[in-house]
Length: 424
Ligand SMILES: Cc1cc2nc3c(=O)[nH]c(=O)nc-3n(C[C@H](O)[C@H](O)[C@H](O)COP(=O)(O)OP(=O)(O)OC[C@H]3O[C@@H](n4cnc5c(N)ncnc54)[C@H](O)[C@@H]3O)c2cc1C
Image (cartoon, rainbow, N blue to C red; front, side, top):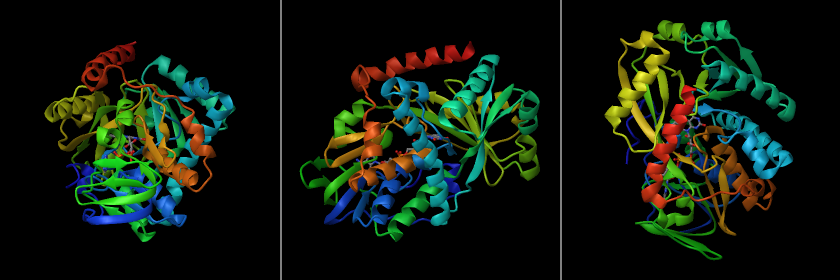
C-alpha cells in the first residue's frame, strides 16, 4: 500500500514498507493506527520500558498525518469557551496548558530523534473582515490575561501586507510559538524512533476483530496480538469492527490541498516574505504555507459530501487564486485530500472502551501538535498517572444524529449554513 499521491509522498524521506503481522505475538500494549497519535503513543510507552506492537492497516503515515496542512497550532478546534462551559474554567485552563505543551513536545521530539521534517515556527491567523479583527484582538486579550499565552503580536493591514502579497487580509495575529512541518516526514520519523526504542511496527495489518478481557486479543488477516493494554488511534478511519461506538461519535470530513509547481525562491519570498503558516478564521477556512522547495501548499474547503477529485482541485485552486491572483499562470503539481475526524462539539474525544482499552479521536482538524501530546497522556495513564488523560474524559460527546446514512446530508446543510455565516 502506497501513500496517496501528494507533494508529501513525492518528497518523503526514505522509509521501509514494513511487512504485515504474521502469526501470534504478545505485548504489554498494542497500538492500532500508524498516524502521529499512534506513533506517539507507542514511542512514549516504549521509552517507559513497555513491550509495544503497533498495527497499521495500510502504511505508517497513510492517513491524515501524512496528508495534513502541517500547521502545528496551540489550542483546540472547539475553542476555549466551549471547554470552559463543559468542564469549568480551571480544568479548561489545564487543558489549554496541555495544548501548549504539545508544541514543546513536538519540538523536543524532532530534535531528540533528528527528524528531518522542515519544522519552522511562526503562524498567522488572518482577518478578512472587521468582525474578524475585533474577534482576533479580543481572543489575544483573553489568551494573554486568562491563559498567560504571550506569543501573539497583532499585525495591522500594512504589516500583514508586507508579509503576504495579497489584499485579502486586513490584519492578523502572529503567533511565534506555533509553526509548521512536513507532516509525512514527521510521522515517518516518529515510526523510525519507535522501532529504535523497540516497538514492533507492522504495516498492512488492519485490525478486524477485538476480543476484550483482562488480556485483549486483536486479530488481523495474518495473525493476532494478545496485549494487556490497547490504544486505538484510528482517526476518521475507525470502523464498526474496531468500535461502532467510536465510529458513531465522529464524522469524517474531507479537506483538500493543492501544491503548486516550484515558484523559485525569489518569487516565493515575494509572495510570502516569511516562512510562516497562515490560516484565515472563517468557519470554512483557507490555510496555506511555503514548502521547503518553494511551492505554495494551499488547502481549504471541507466537503461533507464526498466530492470528486477533479472538482476539489479546481475549487481549491480557485480559493488559492482568490488570495493570490498573481498565481494564475502557475500549474498545480499535486492535489490530494484526506479526512478529519470531527466530533459534534469539535472537542477532542479521549477515553476508554474498557479499563484497559484507550482511544484517542476527535481532533477535528486540529491534530498536528495535539495528537503527539495525546499519545503521551495515554502512556502516562497506562503507567498509572491518569490525571491528565482523565481530565479529557470529562468532555462529554454525543453521537451524530441519523447514523451513517443520514448524517452526511445533515452535515451538507450545516456546511451551507457555515458558508453563509462566513459571508456576513
Ligand atoms: C488534508 C488535511 C489537512 C489537515 N491540516 C491540518 C493542519 O494544518 N493542522 C492541524 O493541526 N491538523 C490538520 N489536519 C488534521 C491532522 O492531520 C489530524 O488531526 C492528525 O494527523 C490525526 O492523526 P491520527 O494519528 O489521529 O490519525 P491518522 O494519521 O489518520 O492515522 C490513523 C491511522 O489508523 C489506521 N487505522 C484505522 N483503522 C485501523 C484498523 N482497524 N487497523 C489498523 N489500522 C487502522 C489508518 O490506516 C490510519 O493510518 C489535517 C488533516 C487533513 C486530512
